[in-house]
Length: 312
Image 1 (cartoon, rainbow, N blue to C red):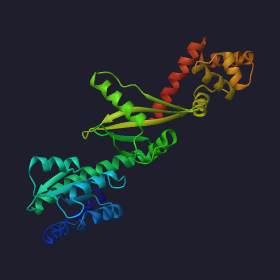
Image 2: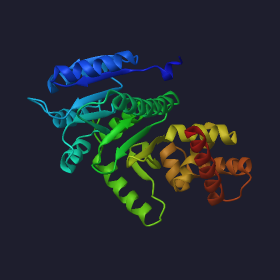
Image 3: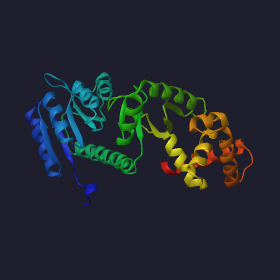
Image 4: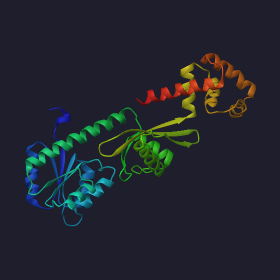
């Protein structure tokens, strides 16, 4: 059987031995690796240690009940993506709402029907695997992508590169959504509702700049945001490669794209305005343009194109 189709690991959390025995036997017979916890505290520890594919969680237990256990699992970056299927004899609307509000993906009612549980586990496991595969692909290609839940602004997941960029530009911890990013997401959501294209978020940090753009919205009301870092050095290197410029010519052209005058550029590069203009003449010739405005527009278009190509 291909690895993607093999049954995975299921953690059962229930304080009733009869329920544990019934579910353990059914899951074991179906080929799953079964882990067991009889209370919320042990469930949290076992989930963090083993990272199961799905958690079957009893809603009512002594001590930490299932609802609080689920909230803690979802608050932990290591376990927050694991699907939780509640097991409960409580079918009133308020209890069903409480299960989903605590982070549950689904629920089954007691008395437990093993075949129903197996069917639900298989469906959630398939969805979880597809999400992991998508995230692994983003990680492998070095994409800086985050998913933020619009309902509460929670950072649901992020690729390693995104984590590095958020920490570098915002100083955030691994599972914290920066307030500035949340503010921008709120404004971008409003723009989408009004039929407008959301603006790009730009955070300047010295010579480094972080740009955030919307990629997509999932069915779970999660916004996928793509982060991209720009800096002066990488832009100059791109200009050298694109237009076959010398390093000094590329530096002059780069600062022209930033709206700097020849005296400004001379001060930045330690050259006279006359020398800057000489370099500009060579730039115009290589780009096939006659004015600073035309050179800047062409350079900026090429830079944007190279950035889009690097992101795909």
